[in-house]
Image (cartoon, rainbow, N blue to C red; front, top):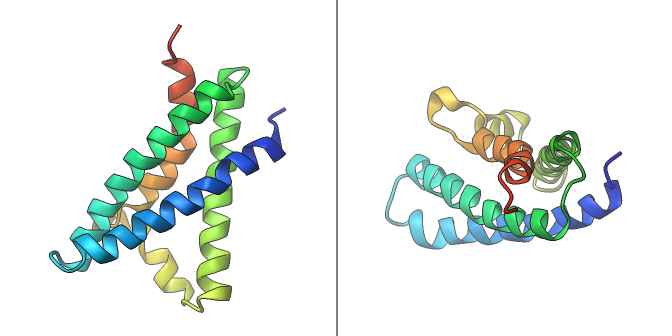
Length: 131
């Protein structure tokens, strides 16, 4: 059984990291690149920043097993998608179609890769943790 509350609390800073990453995109990439390229760069920097955070988290609060690491990743992916859709639709009033757009990899959108990274990274870091 994963520690739901602990891993929820460990997920919360990911919101702050995501907001900073998005603000960085708006201030740095967006003025110089088209929206799609800025989104792609931001997705990759998000993966790197979140990866560094998750690496530290999984060193400090190590999953008990590979199965638990996968469950933690699934929990974090679920929380992220839920937050994105609740915040995006009900708070920011974005239409569902706009929210779904970022998952269209055929259009070059990479947000799904970020969510996938949240899912698999605890397991990867568990499997390849230092001895």
